[in-house]
Length: 165
Image (cartoon, rainbow, N blue to C red; front, side):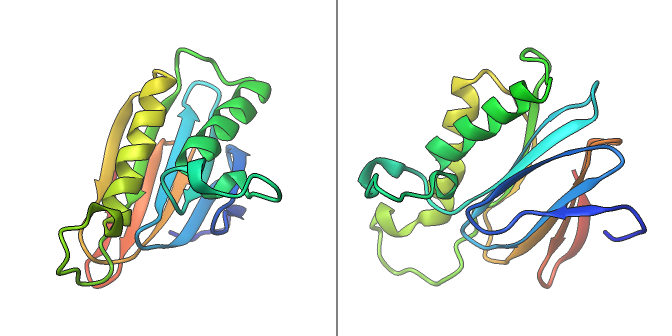
């Protein structure tokens, strides 16, 4: 996951765009979901680090729209279009959404990871962006790095090593 190329870092509740030869990375994906949307023809990609599924209960004043699946994906898609991405060629890869803490409750509200994954998939479907690969769930954190030249998403999972999707 690291060579001499410039790596753009995406923080928690953040998003960034890159064009090859840059790569883009986020770490600390527990229940959060890393969403990569890309145009492989233009070698352009954006990544969002989504913390929560829905902005509906958030205070609108001073709200960080990049924190929520519904608003972060809308912003990411718009930024990609503004940067020249083709509307009908965008694809997505997602990772994260782990259940980081044991939960004896059947209360779905506590299942933040799976709710984040579902919310991200719903938003991508709304924009007609296919999810071509995903690595979600489990109970381990992840770091991901996307290379727009190859469209590979490298995933480093705590205690489970590296994989590419």
